[in-house]
Length: 110
Image (cartoon, rainbow, N blue to C red; front, side, top):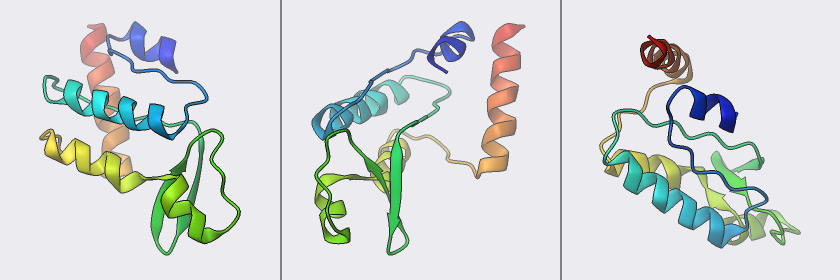
């Protein structure tokens, strides 16, 4: 995915097997770059879980033995959405995002 996104002109923030601290720094960096960008895409290929209708991203080496650990050991996906909102990005539903992403890729390749 990294190579494909770079090929069509995206500036990619790539982390592999990131712990919570690294994930937080990457999300902050993503937010900063969004403020200076026309388009942003957040892609996460790791594990996640939903607890009480809230989605969480699970960092590498997170110590989770029960549901109550998730809030402290994982990252709320809402944090990413909040950073995107504060950067002024309009967030679309999944069908719109896919169409919009395809349109942007087509424009960048033209």
